[in-house]
Image 1 (cartoon, rainbow, N blue to C red):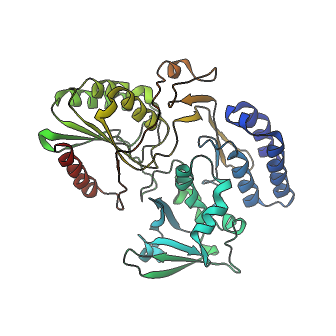
Image 2 (image 1 turned 180 degrees about the vertical axis):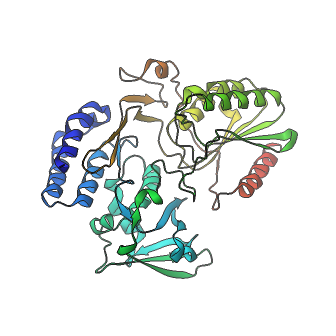
Image 3 (image 1 turned 90 degrees about the vertical axis):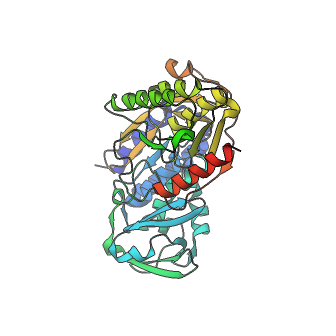
Length: 393
């Protein structure tokens, strides 16, 4: 099976059917298609996949992208961007001593230079690029293309600990593992690759002044568990009218926001003096962003937004689906529908059930910046108590 078949699918199915490509000139498309053809002629799968990544990143729409995780080989290290720093948060046993360290360089090339070289291969906003980019640091084929390759089979990673100690970790390309071992399709920023463990709702109780709802995902293939969780959350919110409600959406990569409407309604119906605090981060995407937008529209100044800029803006193309390319096996995410939650606009591509809910939000500016350096319940709860205390003043 030829790589040409993969490219043909993108040329004949993805590009014509994805409205985000309407903003890309034909000459630009042709140049990037020719780059992919050169990789085919050289019979280089890594270069081919990287060429497709750059081609699909052209619309600068984060939902439209190539996902190579299942078909590439990486060093056994999990890099994630925490704030603006790339950190090692998981690794195979030989590299455990480096966990928690900030990535300084690869093969003596500063990580900032590699990030700059990687920009055109990554789809979406700067925050989305920070989410999906770190897999390139563990992918030897990408490092060659990004100007950070080594002369031999060894790759040197220089890390800086929180105390400033410098440590060099060396990985041999003979010990590579499947990319999906350390990098999930829906990057959530946590150490465990599986991330979402199947519970759509976790509850924390801070007494009469505060109620915490942790919502890790809105994606429910079974179509019933999420709806049941949102109904339970709505009942709980209504039973505590005197409590501030904190909603943790960090790491929530989206799903179906329509199934969250019972909770949105319950939060919106609360007393006029009740705060709703929402925690977000760069790993908050898609339907989770829409959830925040709808709360902002309804609650106005009673919504207190905490964390960091989310992974997408308020105007984007989404819906669509995923195609598994027959030769390479890589996944292609494509879009089919226009969303504009900034201006409340829609067009003929927007599904009617979504168009009926679209509201103009303008912007989603943070009320307080916060990035947790360690993702654990103790750190989160301590911060939540601090926020509750500040809102009572």
